[in-house]
Every structure is written in C-alpha cells, then in structure tokens.
Image (tube, rainbow, N blue to C red; front, side, top):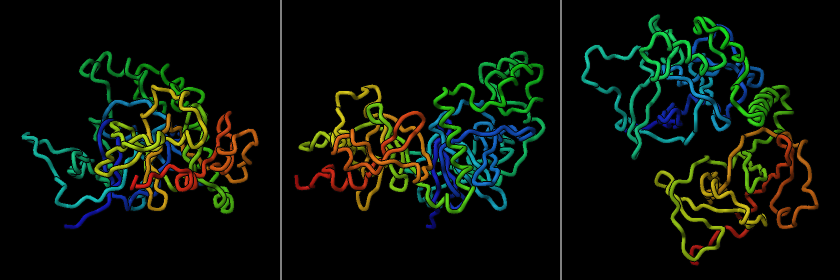
Length: 376
C-alpha cells in the first residue's frame, strides 16, 4: 500500500497533518504586521527574506474563537501551486509516513445535507493511538467564505446572544481584525495594530527579534551563508544555545521510567510514540549545581537531539526561541567560567539582555561521559 509523508502538528487541541512535500520551512512565530482589508483568518504578514508572506490563523479559518499567541507557537510555510502562506501551529511534532488504508476520506454523521462548505479536512488518519486531521490545502488556501459565514466567531458563552455577541467579544479579537467586523464598538480598535498586546516586554522583544532575523537573512547572499540557527534553552536560569541541525523535536515529558545502575545524569527513559529515548541532564557535565533546579519546571520539557547514531533527550527548564545568529556576533568564552564548562562551549553571544553560552553538544554527548555502556 502506498504511503505519503505528512508533517504532523498540534493546533487548538487537534492533531493536523499536511503533506510534507508542500512544506517549505518551519520557524517559531515572529512579530506579524497587520494588513488592512485582509481576510479574517489572515492575521498579518512577515518579510521572509525579501518576500511578503501572509500568515493564517487556523482557529479563525475553522471558525473558532481567536486565542492569544505564545512565543512557543510556530509558523509553517506552505507552498501550494502558485500560492505561499504561513500557518500558525501550537507545536510541530514530526514527519510521519501514513498509508492510504489508514485514511478515512469522509465520515458519515447520520445527518441530511451535512456536507461541509469548504472541505478543509481531506480525511482522518489512524496513527497508533491518535486520530489526525489531514488538511485539504486547496480548500484551506483558496476557498472564500459564504456570505452567511462572514460574521466573526464568538465564544460559546455569547453564542445565541445577539446583544453581547459582537460587543463584549470584540475585546478578545486579534489585533488585525477588519474594522467593519467590530460593528458599533470602534474603541476596541485602538491597540489592534500592535501585535499580541498581552505579551510581556520580554516576549515582545523575542517576537520582534525573530521578525528581524527572518528579514535580514535576505539582505545579502554572503550574510545568509554565515548565519547559524540555534535553539535557545534555559538551565538554572542561564541561557544556552544548541545548533538546530541536530535538534529533532521539542517535547513535553509525561512519564519517565528510571534506569537502574546509571549515573545521576541519566534521568531515565521515555516512550516517544513507540521509540524509547533516554533523558539526560547535562548540568553535572557543565558543573552546574542541581540544588538550584526549579522543581516546578524540572522534568517538564526536553529537546530530542540526534548526533551520529545517538538519539537522546536533553532535559531543560524552558525552550525560549529559535534564532539565527551571525557568526561575527559570537565571542570567546570568558575566562571566569570553569574550565570544564569551557571545554563544551563553542562561544557566547548576547540574547536579549543576557549572555547566552553556545554549547558544543556533539562533543558533550560523545566525550562528556553521558553515554552509558550497555554492558553496565
């Protein structure tokens, strides 16, 4: 049976799939610029290396209420025929091969005239314990709403209440919403030209930095060639960067199985969709005290990395960002840092207002004593 690769991602609690051949790139959500008179679901645009890319909010495309954006959201760039658009996803998971016999093209709900107006969902795929919505890119990108569907979606609490719907809900609408949709409440437009108003100053700086990085990559061929992509993580309140080319995915830690007779740096094993992955705490190798751990965040998130034939999960307190760093901005490791730290650091750079240490994770994993001999 023929199989196709699909990019699987999470959005608003749903698992969605897009044929991987139409995905051009993925990056963390940057600051968006509002566009006047754009469709309701097009919540802004970005300058992607000299090309203006519209960005779609799937919640609004599906007719659900708008939700606030977070620095952990991602943008998936899709090219379908002659159209290119970015869509916002809460979390990108993996690329997975799905066979035709695992796909149910249509569901019968037992209702008359229940045919969907756009067919945004091309089918439902069974994938182990998950059900994945496979998106119809032609309808998703090209279809226009009917006249009856042009009103803004409201929250369930106001559904059916003509007086409150369209008034109180406008306070929670995205900043790029068209003025005509706000009816008699124009005062709520006052801050809609500002991207993600609820974001903290630190989060706004991250969103803006991402947008600048995406724009600057297109300003010269030589400049793009000397940029490196890094995932920015937090350990004990300190910032670290690891090369993105060895990162396979980011994941939440749900259940850990301890591994007997192993050093403290070996946290245990997790089952990652059928693959057993060992979690490693690299703090001890970096001479960082385990006593300073934030117990509320410990064992909550991990970065799955692949170096040569080794796949491991690096336990982190927080995953902040993906950035593009020009190598000219890298500095030497300060002499004040412990020599053991220096051995596994490539350099330092400024991230926000703090210093970020750039890890040589390949060396740390292969020569830092984190790999346990199977015979032990």
